[in-house]
Image (tube, rainbow over all chains, first blue to last red; front, side):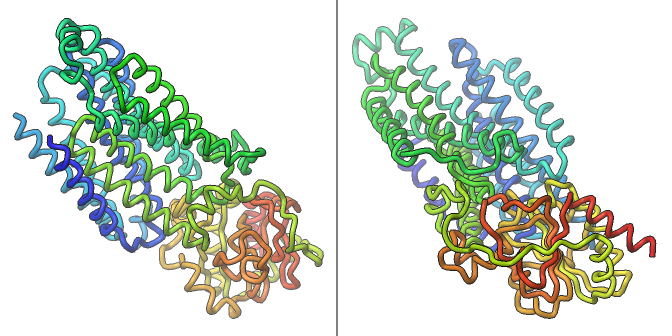
Length: 92
Length: 477
């Protein structure tokens, strides 16, 4: 993909990110943090792409480790956030 | 196929955007989290369709990671939440570092080992070469990922008490860190000029090592009380690392998602800094809480202890009570006992509220999570600004393991390091109980004039035992 296009996407996403959560009630600070933390595990997509057949073994193992770590981040992050938000929900 | 993958990435990005948006609102937060996880699932699934992947290995890795993440998320206690968030954060950062490294390995391997690579090298290095931009973003992914990893691990060590919570400083620490940073910049530039040359790999490894070191040394001088800022900043960094990794492999969903996390994490960081009335630079570089306070704030009065029984008589007559929880409540795991006390006080015809300071605890919203776990009704939680105007009407303020957030020096002692930080004015309540483990200074090492104020009574001992004792007194009568 063209470089300028990627930068363009980056800048727009940055502005969007700042606009998205202008005011968050303090009750939600932790879930917001752990939920967005889970999203940062998107790097798993990059890790998957590193394991191509025919790649040399070092890059395969680097990719393997990266997938494991990022998946822990993703699965754990989403589940723990859901657990927390579930506790918030119980009250009326 | 290419189109399907890219379209799915767009859908995933939209789900992330809505997910984060909905996470910022109590009514929709859970659904938002679900939406963003669906987006993540979609992104992962379509990536598996990419041709040429070694699927067996990929799926094995995904399974291993899922099981570990699942078990960790199921087993963690709510009091262990800050540590777990730090840990996950670190893993995300390390993953981004590895992605950058693996991509470099793939490219450099192609240029040196394969026949095609050798020919390309002989004819024109630029043919399979890494361009300067890709080299730069690779350095960035490794740098940010590395700092996030070791920084989070160090924070994890501090939070779980393995490394001691205090800020650690040594002479010329700032200079040392600056030197580390400079070293990374220089090696990064050398690398970017000729990434696939003979100096390429040594330079890359140097960047990795220096970044990992910088993460440790950057978090080292930051005290436990500033952890909410550090945790949310590291969270922001893990997003930026993913974003940089996205530039390395030119993948738009990584760029969008990483950037969203980076931006929202930064906002949370700024909120935390504002709650302490300090700048981010000050939090990161001041070495706050490293040594005991040397100037000002020398307390003149005596701490006046009170027994649980006497405290009970005062509470029994109280009509308006606020509880001010802090990190000490988390350490003592006292939240359930506190909730029980709250219920009993309510039955006794007393109005009970929980005053929560934005930076109480070790991560943003820490106290809210604990009290929610104990089933404290949401209406009873109030923020600092709602409590302070009427605090003079409060009969008893019970400070449970909080220190800096109720330290009057922040309001009236210009020489205090925390001067200017908004606090909950517990010292203005008619009576204040401070539950404290012992007589020593708190986590930050600051004297607290609240403890010696005329209307303050200290209740020493484990917070959970004390609160349980109070509950027992109510039940016996």
